[in-house]
Image (cartoon, rainbow, N blue to C red; front, side, top):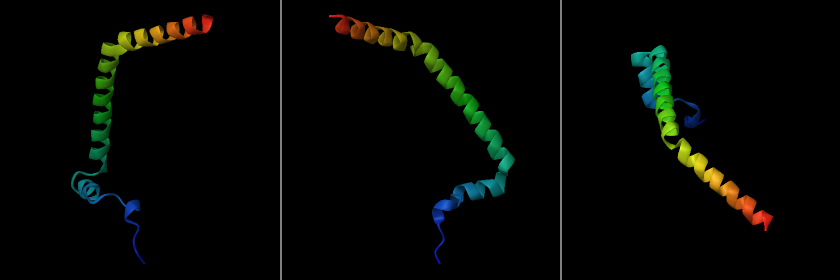
Length: 68
């Protein structure tokens, strides 16, 4: 009977867990999520006005086209 390889962890993860331990991996994941959130927040702060302006323009176009 063949093993279903897609149900197992990838070999690099299995090795990583043996070498560094699962707790270290959880801490790294938390750190990566924290860094990702910081990057996303900075991106949003930088582009918020542009996105909202485009949405407002689109809403105004829609409102004027339906009013005619």
